[in-house]
Image 1 (cartoon, rainbow, N blue to C red):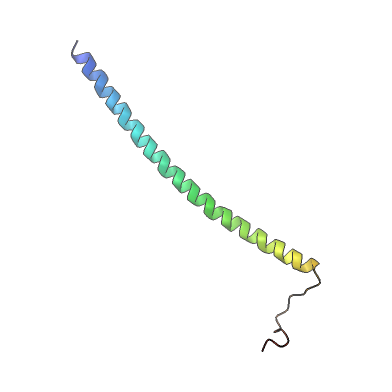
Image 2 (image 1 turned 90 degrees about the vertical axis):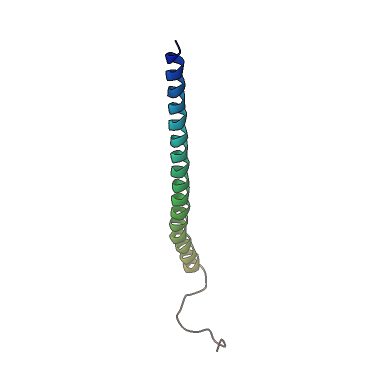
Length: 73
């Protein structure tokens, strides 16, 4: 009878270790995902913002030129 509880305890320790490893891997994967999404979110928003700004300028009375402003010398 003393062999059975020992196997059970070793099995529980093995399962606990595997769960701890899986938890650590899940945390690392989540951090990588969050980092990726935050970078992608910025990269996706940036062109959209530029497009919105250019469209707003197109619709406004102002024009975009490469000439310097008068009196800005």
